[in-house]
Length: 196
Ligand code: ATP
Ligand code: MG
Image 1 (tube, rainbow, N blue to C red):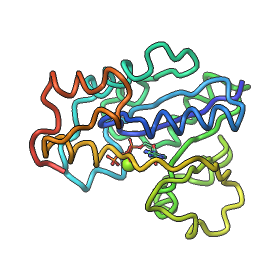
Image 2 (image 1 turned 60 degrees about the vertical axis):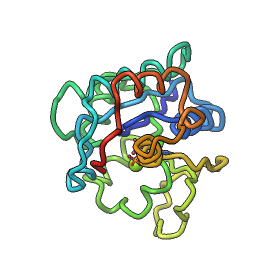
Image 3 (image 1 turned 30 degrees about the vertical axis):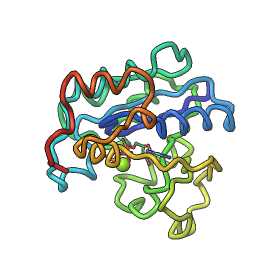
């Protein structure tokens, strides 16, 4: 099987994530896409913003993916209750699915921080590294990484940061979110305080 792997904080999951997963599925002929929410994302440690508890981020993801049969979620990283590097997740998935082909799906904001990824060489051996267009981030700076698959998608100017900001300002975010997610944000009064 050809499996897409989409890691992230998903705080909250939004239509940009679904768009990336859908386009990758179509253009790379994937059989499924596995969403991997982080417990504590390695590159966000220093930001010190309060990250929404993992169980709530998971619930938002479950709502967002409800009824989408080729999109799955794994709580592999969340269960560890610590920072997990992508390479560790990939190794675990590889043990579980030795014959599958993995496509690590990321947005273009990862270009500039690619050198910060732990064990990048191993990551490249375990999967195809896919990078998709994202507004505000250019393709340049990618260096000579020939192993990267550049995924041309229609850029969607949506980020979790924007959603948190707009929510705090009392502005509407419904059109940026998959159905069901806004209800949870309201119910749990998420993103009301400034902590990002
Ligand atoms: P934040 O603003 O909090 O960083 P985010 O919108 O970047 O949130 P993440 O959970 O950090 O969401 O992203 C997970 C993955 O999805 C990353 O690889 C990111 O580049 C990618 N991604 C997020 N939004 C988009 C988008 N609009 N288009 C393409 N890729 C995206
Ligand atoms: Mg991000």
